Image (cartoon, rainbow, N blue to C red; front, side, top):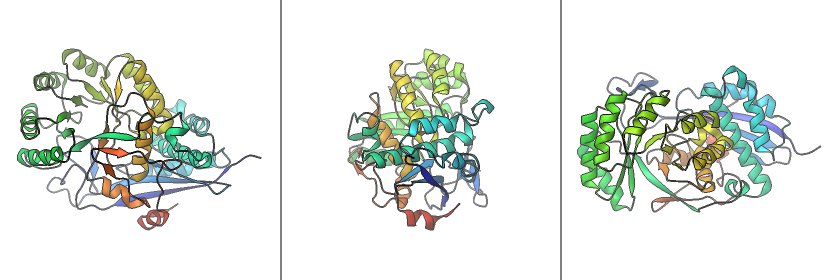
Length: 387
């Protein structure tokens, strides 16, 4: 009998933070566990929340995975515990792709390739790749065929300040540190968004500036914003319309020059293939903690076949998700840039034995086997309750 997975553990982490993701919460939201940032629609947490999974093989090797679960991580945790863990016990720890695809098929015909189930699948897939890499003695980028780069270029995401003057000051500071790109968290109205863009552009004239509209606009509004961004030579326009409006994004892309960036809501190759076939995105943004490594690699190949670049999404994922994203970013030919969240990084490193650090305006690819990082198991236990 060959090697087997003998243990599956999950950990639900909820880390308080005095500096929430994307800046201070709106007034009056302090009593609620989750809140909305109008005009955006999504729920946000006051802290950093995630689900981790730990796989152990009968030879003692351990693999870690993380699913992006910034709200209600108990839900994907329950999916793993209830449905996926029993299927993982006895599986081959050296065969991440076959095992992951078998897991994805468990509820596929019932529509569960997306949503919370997909987040749970992503966590397990990342753990399977970490485990396989440790067994093989190779980092994941080498395990899948080799790294195209050892330094992962990044842009600074968010500029979480309350006024344009403060955002401009922060952009200037990042530019002085050698960063060449920023992304603005906008969607507050076309005129206000343009005012913010102009303030940041004036402060950092050499910065490439992307705009994240957080799905806030109608097609006419997005077109008006996009045409103005064309005049300003914006880097990209991310998430301008409702996330399910494929045709709207295609129509917008046909009317503006600024690349339309999409991907953080999509979980698998089938969803991405639809958008790519319809030419509804110009910049592809998969999040490995939502797709898993197996699907992310398939998505990158689809994007390459469509002659599109990939700019992996990364928001509130902790150290395991970050490491998985970096391994993926190193392993694909068509990388544009990786998203860097300055406020997230200190929290991400809390669960790692050695921190992931920037080298100038790039992440250095971790070179140890698997994800390339060592999880601090005691820290995880202290920050959570294992199931």
